[in-house]
Image (cartoon, rainbow, N blue to C red):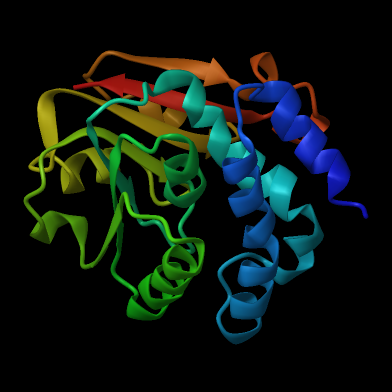
Length: 205
């Protein structure tokens, strides 16, 4: 069963993972595969890399979030990434998964129900139209950084933090960013080749 190598990786990088969490992560593959036939949540040609490219990539943010009573917005969550896998590990955090496309939010809702996850709230809306004050905003391949900061200026607390998953060269995007920020290279977290050009941009509000 070829998925076993991915679960070995998850346990290698996140040794505190427990059986309940692993079982939920295991169920994700079939749930996404079924939904993906109806609506393109994850690139179909990339689906066999589901755990490495999507789940383990999302989990990289665990290194920067404490499991305590805080509010986290996942902006443009699409198929629930990175918020859904993170919520399985960070069960004390409240997650708000936001997307303007209703079909995608419906899919995320069906996964949440199947897995019985109770720390996620989904919102079918544009983030500019909501007024949740979050401690952290996460996002994966949603838009450029400037847009994200502009859209969310009313939905992050004064000392909030952005954790944005990005690929490639981000220097251009960061030129106009006045807020303190740092670039975290995922190759310093993971040794798999896929992560060579991947980054987390951490921005301090």
